Amino acid sequence: MWHTPRGGQVTLRAEHRGGDVLFTVADTGSGIAPEHLNHIFERFYPVDSARTRGDGSGVCLTIARGLATRMGGSLTVSSNSQGSIFTLALLAAHSH
Image 1 (cartoon, rainbow, N blue to C red):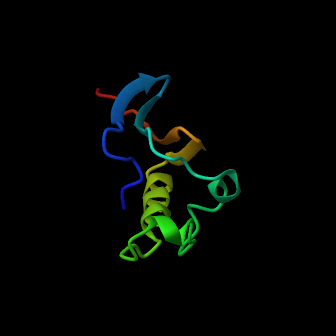
Image 2 (cartoon, helix red, strand yellow):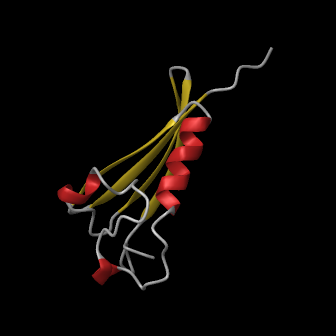
């Protein structure tokens, strides 16, 4: 499901911050309404059926957050009417 219109941008970024590596995906889409932000990681939570094509199961973000947590990290989101930013934070590996 694509929520960034044609001509919009999706930006991927990775950076080392403290003991973490942060991976961010930011878009210039319509954003996620504030009332949905606290729920989008819940299994089968329908954010907006008018924006979907009916082919999503509603579990992808739940699975992604679960995997991040199992790896000792986190998956968060922030959003406004000008897009959304998903941030995956994982502990940086240390070489010996």
